[in-house]
Amino acid sequence: MMHDSGMPTADRPPVPQQEAADSGRLEEGAAAIGRRVRLLREERAISLSTLARSAGVGKATLSGLENGTRNPTLETLYAVTAQLGVPLGAVLAGPASAPSVRGAAVRATLLEVFTEAGATYELYRMRVAPGPGQVSPPHRAGVTEHVTVFAGVLRAGPVDAPLSAAAGGHLRWTSDVPHCYAAVGDEEVTASLLLRYPRD
Image (tube, rainbow, N blue to C red; front, side, top):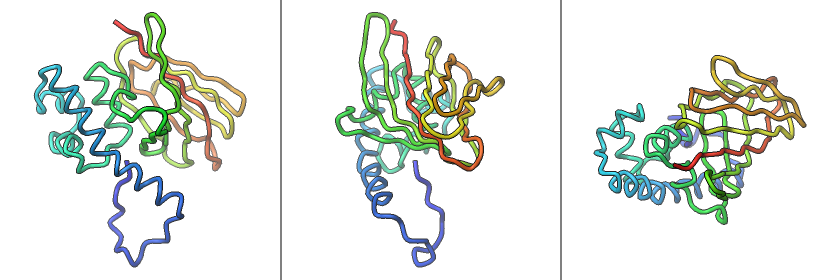
């Protein structure tokens, strides 16, 4: 989910060692994510063009994702998995490897996946950077998000009616509409994110 800034290598600021390691790990996982997306698409007999169109992403973007040549953003993965009818975790490595995905403002690390009668749950550690927020596409009907804020002030929820919570606060909303995440002020937000996907 990192996009090349286009700066010549010599002009780029030094990358902290941990950030470089995280980025490398993410790039190594891109091919595996792409294989899982392709398998899910082919299992459903959906063409590349049809999935790209329904997810609202470019055909070249989806092709690059499936081939492992593009590092997918969180927004793209949400859009694609929603159209495939699967949780985001279905295209990520298992929680044991703590896979992380990034979007315009959000970095989410998968911690746990568990199921009960009627639902699948995914638990993420979430960080929201200060600055412009992030808008995520709708999930399938009935998906809910539950956020507990540990640090910072978070504005999140449906784009038309966002909610706010400071450290110690909790937010909940139904995510079958476009929804947003933004840090209020200059402090990074740290939080847990629990997604509940109803099972058919």
